[in-house]
Image 1 (cartoon, rainbow, N blue to C red):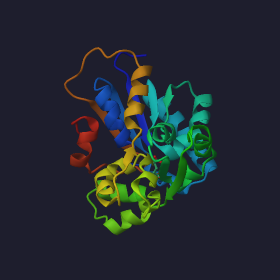
Image 2 (image 1 turned 90 degrees about the vertical axis):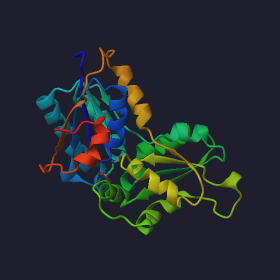
Image 3 (image 1 turned 90 degrees about the horizontal axis):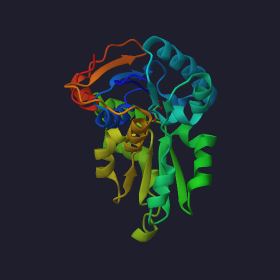
Image 4 (image 1 turned 180 degrees about the vertical axis):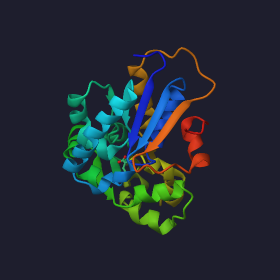
Length: 265
Ligand code: DGL
């Protein structure tokens, strides 16, 4: 592996930027290629087979064209369906993003945890298995959202998103209204990489305070553990961004912070 590795970060849209941000913080010396498969967005509306048929060849093309040293699948909806297929098709290494059910259940005091993801993610056997294996006595509520990823994209692009639109998607996460605080949901897993983009709004609209579990820092630690040690930090993060639809990005001011302050090429 090259001392200054190339890391490919892949998502259906802009959600993977919340993972990229943490990885860039951990390894500012790496070269980054961020690919948004917006031509197929939203992944949450596709079946498992459609996602496998789309992602496996697409990642193969990206590997042959850009020769990344490591690939981060920065999308829960993809990861719960395709990681095994990718690992058997290509050498990798691959790092996936799957619902952080284990740490959420380990830290919940009320033993009531909700998992907020796309409709596809909450339906998948992979997610059900995580609950069977790691609920640790917690009551886990799965909440599949049809619209929140698209609302997050709109908000990041400077569009208007009303409180009512957000509330309608995430209120079912709050179980135990009317009960005393010791019996209510106290931990919510952000099981879609788009949702941390709305964290300020989610906190403002939440009927009571909860811990939101964002897996991005853990993914950055995993990436770091798979790479050789950094040789030093360059002046600027080297980064490129591609949309599969071919559209140019017009979000520079909004995107810059996710790339460690540098405007992506
Ligand atoms: N960012 C993706 C995830 O983590 C989902 C968005 C979509 O539906 O495409 O699940």
